[in-house]
Image (tube, rainbow, N blue to C red; front, side):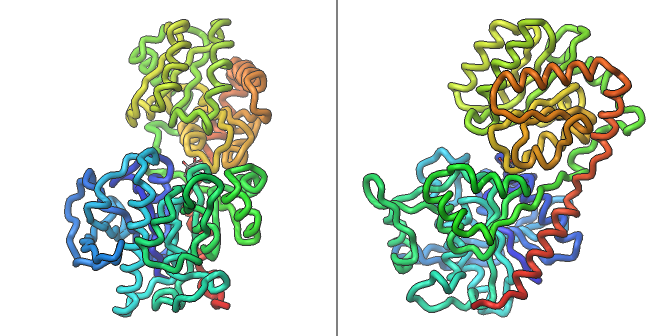
Length: 474
Ligand code: GLC
């Protein structure tokens, strides 16, 4: 079984968020299970890799011309996973989804990877599974001519004959929307695309094309697979998800135990954590007090991460001098201003660090008592799992992967309604339990004993790959 895992980011090479962590750990775990998986990533100019070898040029049709893309091969650090990197001026830059030209760039990346797959097939190197991730790579199933049901006109490509595609959704809120003129650049039959035109000139939604054409759609937790169907992610995404719900499954992400390894054991966790908490307070100039330290680590995304209920809740408890609060992450200026308004009032008990600092993040994971994850939606979420591994008790909203990983009153605290009063209630409940050392100690141990290894997830993906390969094209 040969698998190509196509992604826009990979931890240790180029990482922007949770997708990068998954794109590192899942292929590594699959390799350990004996799956022959290779990663494909654009060779952004900012990637600094030692030992990447050029294995040849690739001629890619684009906008009526042939673009020369240079293909490099490297090894993913500390793994046996081969990494293919595609170098071309169009693929130099990528800093997130705000750049207007990103969708065109990733459409070109998909065209490049599709060409590569076809050339490999001609050379007798056939990929059985193409595993795509989020909107960046979701044009691939269409380019590979996957689904004969909707495939109109053009002949099947060589590679498409036995290649199956999977699209994993990490975040359905991002779509990659692009003007329909893209179709001309790719030189495909217009009728294969779903032209959308409720306003202005016609456009294409890249995620939607992936949802239409992929053989299987997965997302990163079983609960989110159900929730996603009820939410509204825009008419084009939601309607297609519902239409294809029999092809949608949820597989819970894992946690890389080597990447996230506390320096203490379950036995001495409580003692060690106290010392780390003292360091953390010192470093952030928070006084030694008898109140618990609550923390938040992550992207400061107002629409997803629950900041609009988090800030008033934290303020409510700071006002009563009931907690200290540590917040680490980066976000839009408007969100940062909202946070700074609160720190201006309660700075003595509220430390806000507006950067992405992995070392400090680790200190918070280890030194805080309770980690808040009040997300509005959370496909999987990683920080709650990291917190548990460090014996820090997560307090989460019952949604997506948070609902699948945290057990209320056993390994953490769970609240349901997306409103500040529910969050405050849960924070007060957590504080009460924290004041009972015996019960708290038990929870810390139970949290640290959780096994979120990637092995379990990788086994599920391997089983899915096998089933797909055995399914004959209709
Ligand atoms: C996205 C989701 C997050 C998930 C991650 C990896 O960042 O928001 O919930 O854990 O992708 O799948």
